[in-house]
Length: 119
Image (cartoon, rainbow, N blue to C red; front, side, top):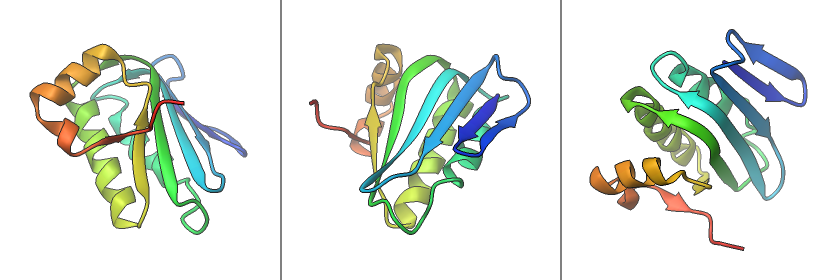
């Protein structure tokens, strides 16, 4: 897993999950690619902590690169959303893979998460 921002890469297993953090105004971007599972889930929160908490109003979590998500990965997304929302951010999902969208529907988490409007 690895996390990237303007200062480089942090992590242990770049083959499993790659996270890219881009801070900007009015939105920051948290881009996930690979497998979000019990081994990589803690990195999501770590990467979210790289977001500059003083400038963006919104954090877009781009899930389009995810190939697999297990229960621990889903829990990490929920925890990250809760932490960012508590810090005053609007958190929007982008590019949710159909299999994850189905899990969110079954678990009624579609009521918890918000999606970026289509362009």
